[in-house]
Length: 144
Image 1 (spheres, one colour):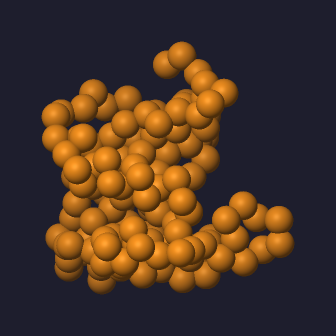
Image 2: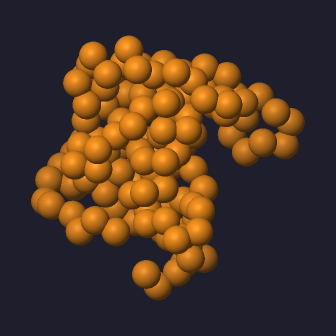
Image 3: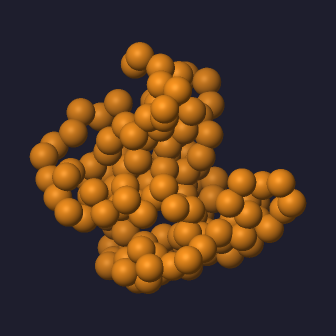
């Protein structure tokens, strides 16, 4: 990897809905009180995929097999940092396992179009999700 990994996010489809988290409403928090996707900051020696899966476990209590991840792409930053976005699918009955972790106010399984249309979604994730849905990720990806 050329740059420094800063984190990873996961568009997790539970059935045909998207697992989302309402960010804390803490003064000074970037995107406070906005809907977000599971994921977050990188910890030492993690791959981007390990980061996304760990964060999903911490935030939604879901343990995911890496094989459910269908697509991933480094969207990077203007300063050359590495920031991955993944997409994964699990059956709808996995929703029974979701329990909110210690970050965020709430979780929801949101209709995909509702997420894309929502005024209070962390904005950079809308075009990334659209990329995946448009087939940008139809080819296999090299797992980081």
